[in-house]
Length: 345
Image 1: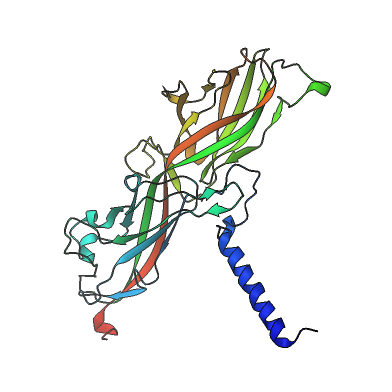
Image 2: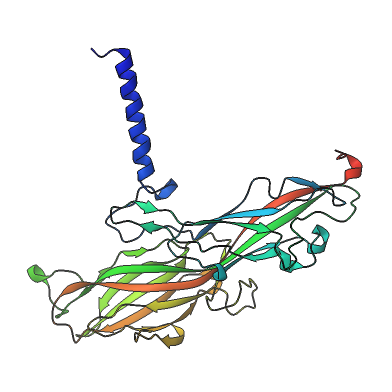
């Protein structure tokens, strides 16, 4: 029988091995276990935002008695990269001059670094996305590096601070569709089915293709119907990716607009899609456009593909890029105390 010292050594070695294997998995949280047979990590999030503990603090004092800063941590949980000039964080809900800065300019800041998206390795392991810390105040006057409540209060007052995070994002989608030389082909020789609902895979992001169906129309054309949906938090908003900012007003025509680009060709023929507005043609000869998801509701798109040049039967990847500007918010309440009624030290 093994003595106690040998058994103890084996336990230590097993624990060390478990820790090592866990560290080598490349993942974390809900991205640690990913199906190796699927093309993307998936998920409904882009950036994840949170206030750093104590910045801002739970309470501050009036009359410039408590300087403080605001720090927002951003983590890229989706699979698209976000460049510094494609994102900004703005602190709203407070009067800048009440908190010791000259204007709202000091409460708006771009990302300090690029946030790379999460990546899936060939073995199913995950490289987590990038992280960044966005700190306030930020402005042209480098001498102003803290906030403080300036007015003289006559009693305590809670102040609601909100951080709006606006950034450009992209969801890549891929679906296997069936392409046949003879659309009437059935029976033993049938390698795939044309008339059926297909499974679509979406990269991690808050806008997805949630349904896709393929059907034959005529003898030399197939039709692909798909639905674009907002799957992120319903309190969030999204906008035309080409707009300058996230202006969340009912009158903004860029609100709830998604840029749609079908990127696949079959036998050199690009899809022709209806339901797209303000269409454009890429350098590769692909026609894309914009769709308006009215009040954030799902929106269908219909694409027709001419397959008269096809000489065999095969499964083809029908790929669509969805681009948008995304807005999400986090909020915190800070209690501003009157130093004259109980915060003397």
